[in-house]
Length: 60
Image 1 (cartoon, rainbow, N blue to C red):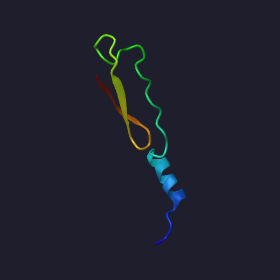
Image 2 (image 1 turned 45 degrees about the vertical axis):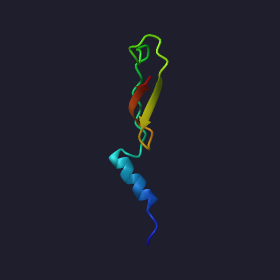
Image 3 (image 1 turned 90 degrees about the vertical axis):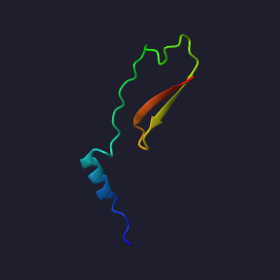
């Protein structure tokens, strides 16, 4: 079995736009995450393998 052609893989990723980190949208600073006053809940971020933020969850 031949070794993977990493240069070709990198070239294809660049052409498809999947090899580069996408800039993350800024969070909504100043807006509360929870509607409960003085909430002490925790926030969990779900990200893809490449680090792109998919969803934020707030737990009480």
